[in-house]
Length: 304
Length: 270
Image (tube, rainbow over all chains, first blue to last red; front, side, top):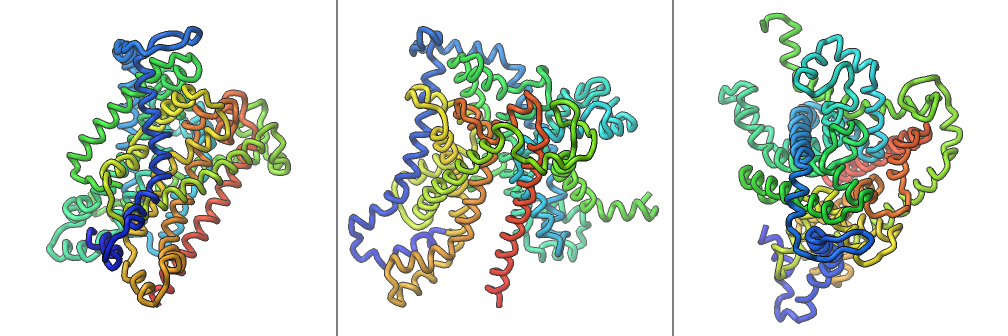
């Protein structure tokens, strides 16, 4: 890649003038400035807010009150645990559901490939809130889906697991996880598809020629080669899912509130800014640590 | 077990069945939205089927404030797309074509917004605006949208520029094209699919954004904010009409995009 990046500059380097050398900085300046002012700087402000004390009426002062972090975590750790649990489950489900579809598009769809791709991408462009509200209709009490689940005794199992309650699916963990899975599924399918599509089909033939069964071919050739897609797909699913509060609000009840819901209500309704800022920093730290460890272990660092 | 023909067939087509089941899961809500755009519900919520009616389709703007919020969302998405695409394309070119200091720091600054739960960015941006005493509304939403769309545009454009053959530009220069001419007539046309993909993504992300907008909109109501509010107050059927129309437009746009891309691929082969 380095050869490619340096090549265009090479003929002009006879005596690189200052103006030429400044070109990349001029190109970077506006965008990077935008990110510094509206992404990095707000983080600093939020860090400062999280160690302030005071009230809305009297104003807030920086008092280095780190206790807020501990208090916030102690009070809301069920929501943290729930967020990670729901987001983790949804990510796993996305992988299990998304892999066959990505595989289908990459290897089996033939002339249907473009149509299927359109059907995966198009929902992206329809407001996700409207589509999430549609799940209220699909999972409605006494509706066909819930009826079918009850008849097949699926609800008995999920009740036993604590995922559903009685004959309801709405306002249970299952509804929220179902909504999260649905909302972030395209973010899993597209990277998976991209990395599957790159696989040279001759590798499959070679595996077959060497007497590998289809299952072995998948385990030893296809899946390892699709790892970059698996890694970026799981990240693109898990990160937004862990901070989401829309699904918990629309499809869940007060028992399914996630940490996003707490941050939202602390910030916009309770107006307890220090607690909200501390919560959002704890969430950020948890997610960044998990992501870093995960990327290290998965061994793919070139995601950008 | 496997000598039962049906089981054999199931085993052989397991991937196809699984894939189609997932596809059904993805499409089902869109079908529901479409079907319920022809509903005439009793009461304020459009969650259960009552009877067929085309009333909402005849009067799509019949709900107070809905079409206003829609047009606001379109305006914000339009300007956010332009802002993010211009800034993002510039960054992408700098990253691929030039050598400069602090590359690592700049790469992480671009990567981090994509690796951050949206609610964290939303909350911190609100702290900044509150501290600056900024009036929340159109401009704060636009600033926020450009900020989070930027990284996605950079990624899309960068991928395309990286795969460009530098010899094409050398050839243009050998044929006495000036730097501006080379850029406008060779570089930009080749990079345009990447730029278009980035712009389309930015538009979709901005138009559909809820979390960051919810924090930084003040009392301004975008379309997603309107839908969110209606989930509490009562969902008018017109929401489904807009949702259905958006889906149809999206299918047409995406299909057209693929058609153009395919034709280019074919003409490149020939």
